Image (tube, rainbow, N blue to C red; front, side):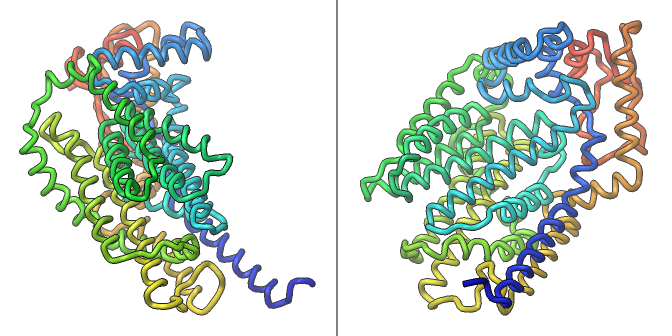
Length: 492
């Protein structure tokens, strides 16, 4: 029997709205993509890449590049911070192939957000016994995370700051959902592969950064405790792997070296201060963007969870709230204990991402609870065209516009600021002045260079993170000197 005319019209309209939503997401994130072409390396980009850069300059090729990245990893493991995964990744900054390739950094970060989200949504659907497209929900969440993160400069445009936190935090989110799938799905042929993947991911995350590693371990521990009463221990091995990696990082000579120059706090003060700071941070993050984001997510969450058989109870919400607060507080504890500070913007981005995914988990629990206890939720859309669906589509578009404009809420108006920097010429001026510096750095006839500070016309608030020092031995001048083989200072 063929498809009815009414059904064909419905499918056609659904496809039209689906494409419209994709175009809306692409439009609001386009300024972020376009401004990346003016971005250039700075600060730790030189500190972590001078060995890989030298390997390519000497014609070592890809094998030599990988060896140099491993040497960089070993160097920092023994001399600075003991993170045995992230230093390798930071040594492979695209600018080692040429400074103009730094444009790829933002694309790599965006891909590291979208791809885990895509596979997470697919896993959630399979665990809940549902199916459907995951591309648009993953794209929408990527847009929200990219445009509303607290510090976009260190989360999207400064590669060494971003790659040290964003990909590892997203990997932790992926790993938690992967571990949950071990508990929720039957032990089919893919079980062993998923279990081994979770074990490997936990070890990799523990070598990335302290806050993502701590969040991964803490949530895995909570899952282990929760499912122990049901005699399910699928997450024990990933938890042990994460703890083993954390121990490898903690015992590293580099960790001791870094700790010796930082002002360490006591355990009691750390817990006390981070407990209050977590409340303050959570309250600041619960702005209009946050609530609109959750509201737009309702139809997708409803579709994914409509076959859930677990009976959600009121105490589950209390558990989720406590787990979220404990994780956010714990993530702040890691830097505060080590340095008596709550960390830079790139670290706050990681905590905010974890908070966001706890919020989505709470939303999913609320949707399931309402469906189970109210009776059918007739008025709740599930992705099919029906009464009220046009209102949800309008809300989707309004949400994208809100995230782009971000009128005075927490974080940076990333989309709007990127667009303004491009249209008003600040981004282009920044790229041009940085290219003039790089051209001088690469001049073989010059051994000492004093560069001028960036002009006011090149003051891009999203691209500019750190500049040189007037002291040739200062940071990051020393690393720029090693990278280009000449003494570099900032003229006064």
